[in-house]
Length: 129
Image (cartoon, rainbow, N blue to C red; front, side, top):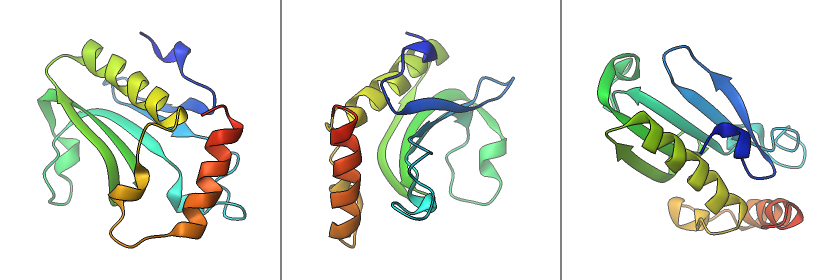
């Protein structure tokens, strides 16, 4: 699978020569009016360290990570793979699951945000999820 086969609403936001990629969901609606910009769902494909200390992500590892962030500190999916090509397929699969409404993003939040969830549900449903 390649990034050309992303589901509706998802696009490649950034592609680095090192192989790292960021996918973004509907940046056109996460503009701060209808939906808050910091809540832009993003999928990171990276081989950077996942350690929690500052700057750790700049150090390459032998593993590839696929992480769906709902906000900078809110992860809905976090998976690790030994091979980049498998991780690319997993990133596309994560985007497909999100677009289909198969990611329960409510569980990722410690504090419920029902008004936000209802707006996000409406965007996903409008895209065919």
